[in-house]
Length: 227
Image 1 (cartoon, rainbow, N blue to C red):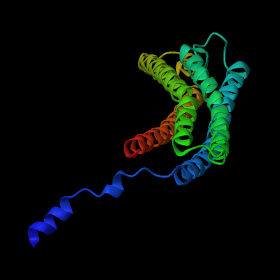
Image 2 (image 1 turned 180 degrees about the vertical axis):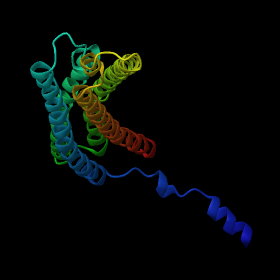
Image 3 (image 1 turned 30 degrees about the vertical axis):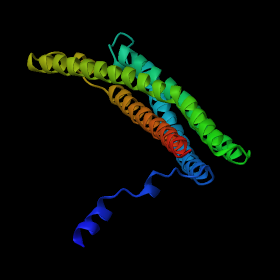
């Protein structure tokens, strides 16, 4: 008696291999993509505005209150790499809008009256095509911005060491003030961190939506096996 019970427990459930109906799967994916896309659009819009505003403010302070000969982080390679990351993040803001429109395309597809296989295949192609650049671009932006952050930290470390040596050797107070870490440097770091956070979020959203396309692909394979 127990042996037959164990066999029943170990026996795979055929229902677990059955594909999900496109009439259930596509609306479920559409709703989740729409919610995450709009949330991400607002979040990236805020982070992009914060990063851009911080860089502009840092440049303004540098121009108005600091000597033009002072080697400052806001005019170094790190700031330009951060600016490149901000540009990529601005493009990703538009991509989040596109992901929201993607959900509308999936809704129309589900109402088109196509066959089960055709609907799932079209949904898979739409999602995977839309997320291809949506994953590559933030990866490139992240790499460039992180390199920029490393350059910024290296520059600040060098400035701190120079400042320490000047203080130890009893240098001129005005020279020490110019050589030290300034508010502008901290603002550039803040912009870099905001850019990295925004690009990481954009990459995560793109990979998550791409995972939904892979889920549709798996259900399509199940449907073909059943057929």
